[in-house]
Amino acid sequence: MHTVIFSYIFVPLSTLYLARGTDFFATNFSSISISRSRQAEFLLWCLLTGGYFFVSLKRILQGAGRSFPVRMEAGILSACAWTAGLFVLLPYLPSRFPLLSALHVLSALTASLAFFFCLLTLSVKVYLQRPGQGRPLLILLILTASFCCAALIATGIINTAMEICLVIAACVLIRRFFILFACA
Image (cartoon, rainbow, N blue to C red; front, side, top):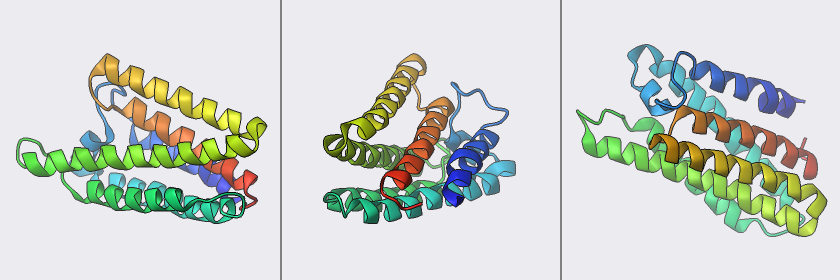
């Protein structure tokens, strides 16, 4: 039951709440993080959302490991957690700290791509064993990647709309994986 509440209510709503008052295609969560009045809110969102994804995927990988090898996904998940921690701790103030800001952006991009790749490889493995159950997972990831690529091309930046899209897609996938691997 807790996965339903987190995946379908808490994480999506807290993500949309964090993005409130911003132009979804002209800003991103890094911009929100530098606002003094919202730094604690951003940090709390990172800890709760990132923690939920990490703990959930660890449990999912344990269940999936009974069906197919998940060593690569476990390694990707660990790398994702480390790089995510790095971008949360590094400041994004390009005019004051250009190097640290560049590392912030690089670690945020790396963590997001690693997270996406972990979800993708897990979805492909499900598809190869159970095409009927894996196909919707892959379609969701293809739609998510297509939207994010189109938004990046249209705006030239990684933007809030892309971040929201990835988070919500990940919530749906996490819940589906819990059901598929009887972790719920």
